[in-house]
Structures are given as structure tokens and as C-alpha cells.
Length: 448
Image (tube, rainbow, N blue to C red):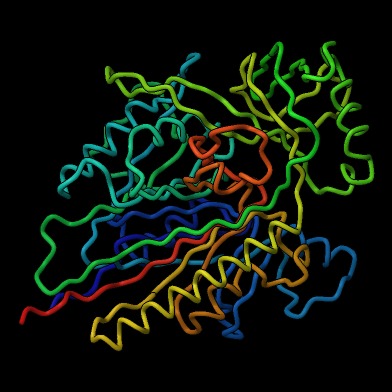
């Protein structure tokens, strides 16, 4: 009997480790022929090998505890630690597909990225669309235009999840062609249905659930003019009830007057949620007009003449609202996920009674670093929906800066929007969120 070989390895490490050294060490254990992705996370979530208990650890928080002598149960080194996830998924093939970035204005080679994914999926399955994509973006990469293309290119039953930005390293196949004068901007871990799946192997299903963590405040504005810098945008705006445009810091003063300084300044983070109509296509395919709701970090600091956001991609005419981090939706939607997982467990228990074997065998969470610590009242709040429902089942995750998850704006944030037809608006990158990817195995039904 051949040994079971892992299909992929994910490692999230603390900032004290050197990425290249970590890759060499992990390759020394698992070999260099399987997909390996290593990233520097804001923190890790998983079972502590010393206590066998589930913990959430954030490096910045631990550094503050050490500096100010705050009490902590475990007293770990503030920047050292890792979570290692080793995956074996019978019936699936797993591959790495990198996203390249070249020199020039259209630097992200997104069309090539999508076509490479389609090519790999077609080679190993009955479809040009994979079962799912786990996407890891470099911290300097603007992943929003990539998510627009993947939303256009792949059907709804292809899940797309991941980390919106961190330092990372991975090993590509020797057969991968690297375009001249290009660097890596992101990497996709593809899950495809194996066209040559052996008899007797069941089917793995993926369940994606998202907890949101922001609330809309104030009126709807519209962008008038835009001034883009390398990685940030300044703009002027207007609103329906006030015909004069807001210039400089006037828009900040207006939202403070509307909402209240106490509410705005009490929030840990402020964003603008921009609704965009964009024409999407891949290669020579027919373009399609699609709508997206995308969040941009809002940071009016320094001596800027116009209020800046920390990214690009905003156009004149785009409507937007302000959003602030908020515990209430984070708590309520996390509780919703707990009950969704409870229903999933009950469904599987009922199947077992009918002699249909199905079970949850693993889960991965990508959780915003801002939700860590005691922000939600408990230091392990990201763990409890899964761990309470599936004790003993493998579960791990990381703290991230932004969470990638395909979603419908109307479903996720519909109660906060004044726009019509917001169920046709795609929302794929979420601030202050927590994304759960739950995996279940369904045994084949024996023939009678």
C-alpha cells in the first residue's frame, strides 16, 4: 500500500521567522513536489501543541503585553509561533497558480492568471472551472481588480476565499513559465475534481460562511473628481441634499457632523464602501458590465489637501457611504454561523440514521486582526462556532488584514444600503470580517 502523501501545506508564521528559511525547513519535511504556501500572518488560530487547547494569538497584542507587563496565561514569545495546516483531500487535485506583475500601468497580468487557472482545471477535471480557489495576495498587491475578473470568469459554485494581503513565499512548479521582467503578486491554491478519481472514493464538499464586522453610517455621497497616487486616492464628493461639492477635509467634517464625533472616533477603523459599475472580460471574450461594492480604508491624516484612501480604483461618479468597524454585526453574524454549523451537524446526523455517511473533517478560518484579543468579549471568539459544534475536528486559521470571500452585497450588507437591486452587486473583499471554510466528506452510496 502506498503511503498517504499530503496534497498541500499551508503555514502561517510570526514575523520573527525568515520566510526563505521557513520554506526550506518545511520542504525538508514534506518535500518540494507538493504545493506549499507560507505567509507572515498578523496572528494564528488553532490547537496549542503544549496544552491541546484552541487559542488565538496575535503578535502585536503579545508584544504589548510583554512591553507593559500585562498578564497572559501562556507568556509566549511575542513574535514567534506558527500554525501548520497539512491537507489531504481524496478525490481532488491541488495545484498552485501564481499571479504575475510586470512593469507598466497595467502591471497585474490578471488575464493570464485566469487563463492559467482554466487550463489547469481543464487538464485534471471535467470543467475549466475549479471546485475552489484559495487566494493569497502579497501585502503590496491591490487584489480588488483581480477579484473583479475572477467573479466574471468563474461560476457561483466555485468558491473563492483567502487572505487579502500579507508577506508570503511559495514554490512554483519547474514547468511554470515566468514572464520576462515580472514578479509575483499573489498565488492561488486550486482545488479541482479529479477526473481519474479511484472507485470507492467519495466526494468532498466545501461550505463557506462569512461574519461581517462593519456598519454603514451617514448619507450616500458621489465622487466628483479623483486624484490617484501610486497606492492611494484623493477625491472630492457631493451629496443630494447639498449641491456644493465637498473639497479638502470638508467631507470628513460633514460625516462627523452627521454621525457624531464620539461614534466615528470610537471606531477602530473607518472605510468608504464604493459601489462600482465596471466592464469585465478576459482576453477577447465579450465584455460584461458588472457591479461591485468594494471597501477602501479611509485615513485622513497629515497635511493632505484632499481626504485620502489607502488604495486605488475609484472613479468619478461612483456612489459611496462611510462604514465603521462595529462589534454588533460581528457578534450577531458569528452567532449566525454557529447556528448554521449546528444545522449542518444535525443534517449529517440525520444522514447517518439513513445509512448515508457524511462528516465534517476540517475547517479553516481567516479572521481580521482587528477582531482579536477581547474585542468581541472573548479571546477565542473566532474558534467557538466551529469548535463547539465539531469538537476534536481539525480546525486552524490566521489573523489577516482583509478577508477574501465571494458574496452578494445585498445579502451581506443589504440592511445597510439605500440602493436598489443591491442583490446584483458583488462584494468579495471584507474588512473586519471572519471567513469560515468548512470541509465535509460524503461516502459513496453503495450500489444495491
